[in-house]
Structure formats: C-alpha cells, structure tokens
Amino acid sequence: MYPRLLIDIGKLEQNLNAVSKIVKNEGGCTLMIVTKGICADSEVVNMVLKHPEVDFLADSRIQNIRTYAGRGRKTVLLRLPMAGEIADVVKYADLSFNSELDTIRLLNEEAEKQGKIHEVLLMIDLGDLREGIFYTDEDQIFSVVEEILKLKNIKLYGIGVNLTCYGAVIPKYDNL
Image 1: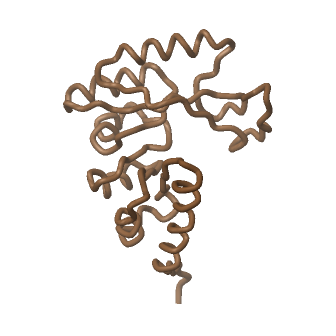
Image 2: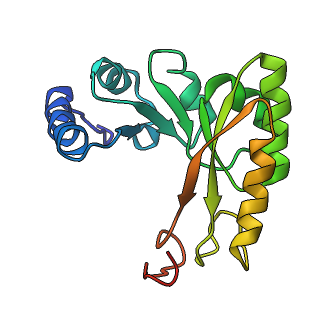
C-alpha cells in the first residue's frame, strides 16, 4: 500500500472554528485561508467556502485558484504574477501581490479588457531580498504608489512585506 494523507474534515472544521474565533471575533481581523498546502483539494475547499467567517482563499498557483474563483470569497494570488499569466490572474484572482510597476501596468491593461478592477498588494522588500520593491529611500515607494493610484483598473489594496521567510533577517524597529 502506498503512503497517503487522510484529512479529517470534521477536525479541520473544528480548527477553523477555533482560529476564526480568535482572528475575527477577538482580533478584529479578516481571515485568509491558504489552499496551497492541500493543492486546493475540493473537499477541503468546499468546507472552507461554507464557513461564514472566511474572507479570502489564497494560493500561489493560479490553476488552484481557478477551481474556486467566483464562489463567494475573494481570491488572492500569493506571489508575483508572471507576464505570461496576466489574463488568468485578472480573470481568477481578485487580488495579487506585486512589486513591479510594469507588471501592475499589464494587470491594468488586462483588467480594462475584462471590464474589471484588479486589486494589488504592493510588496516592499525590507532586506531579505525575497520579493518586493527594493528601495533606498521612502520617496521611491511614494512615487510607485502615485503611479499605481493613476491606473483606472487597479485598486491599491495595501502594502505588504515579507520578512524572515527567506533571508533570516530578524524584524526590528530599524527594518520595519
């Protein structure tokens, strides 16, 4: 018999209930479930979609997001989009992480073609060189933000950072 992974949906739902209570009720935050680790398994995704406290479903693979796009929750591409997949990103993901103004312009053009507004989370690199705009002063960030705000079919959802995931940079007052 080959190795296999058994997922107890009931226990997973209990965990989701506990986490949502902490995140939503006590923390006042939104709740994003990442489907990447389960390859967007349909049974798990269906359970998550039925949960009233889940705001977002996210993945780093657009082919996984495609399986649940348009089913009542915002969808998020958790990585930088590649130029060759811009049409699918706009079609299936409501929000994507971005650090290149050229890519955001391509998303804007495609969103206009599709008659949509695409949201972007602008990633800022804080020193671990993983992803995001690498800047030497904050004026560079402000100029990129100004350019994004001029685009008709792009909405700046917010600013994001990724720290200690790749380069082992410890978060401190200076780098945050």
